[in-house]
Amino acid sequence: MAEKLTDFSRLCIHTITTKPWSLAECLDNYRKAGVPAVTVWRQWLEPQGVQESARMLKDSGLRVTSLCRGGFFPAASGEERRNALDDNRRAIDEAHAIGAPLIVLVCGAVPGMPLHEARKQIADGIAAVLPDARAAGVKLSIEALHPMFSDARSAVNTLTDANDMARKLGDDHVGVTVDVYHVWWDSRLEAEIRRAGKTILSFHVCDWRTPTRDLLNDRGLMGEGCIDIRGIRSWVERAGFTGDIEVEIFSDAWWAIDQHVFLEKIKAAYLEHC
Ligand code: ZN
Image (cartoon, rainbow, N blue to C red; front, side):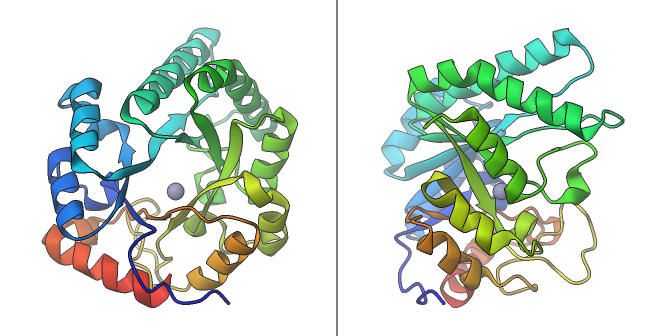
């Protein structure tokens, strides 16, 4: 079992975790709360544009852990697939501009498309944008999503799938993201984390509530659910991962409260349960 965390030096918060806050509010409030790192969701770049966002991030002094998210490669028509590649290239430019070392890929799926076809289109899509990522010095991280999202969000549903795809692509600019919410249930998890080793590029935490009231927006604060977060952290660290621990919570319930109160609860839960 990993040691308890005793400070906030590796704490990163996703802007979507405090969804009611703008980018300026996220940066100001995280910094004041002693949170040293942020993962920026692309929607948070839109209101003021990428260049202004980059300046704000630089001035904040916060470390940019990653940009969320690229992906959504599979599509029914060639034109839509080309649009998806263009969008991923824009994400690579944005990551480069804001100093994000990696983009998390929610790989995509199309209702009705066989999953093996979606997986092929995902691998082809990543391969197509890899030269751009390499040129920009931005890594692409394949995040396995819980199988309940295999209809429309991702055909990559286990760390085994993600590892297989990353290995097949065989490029040092491709790795995997371990998000405890998506993979905690998998009996192969420890072995696949070991297999991923240094290709683990990022680590996301939250909790699985019982019962889960909404498939998308009812993630729990760490400690609110049944995931052995510290146990999984011990596995990723044994595999060589030393990066940020990223709090990524989509929750209608938590978004409804004062986000300053929520931020303090995140910090307490981080020390207690991560
Ligand atoms: Zn995640």
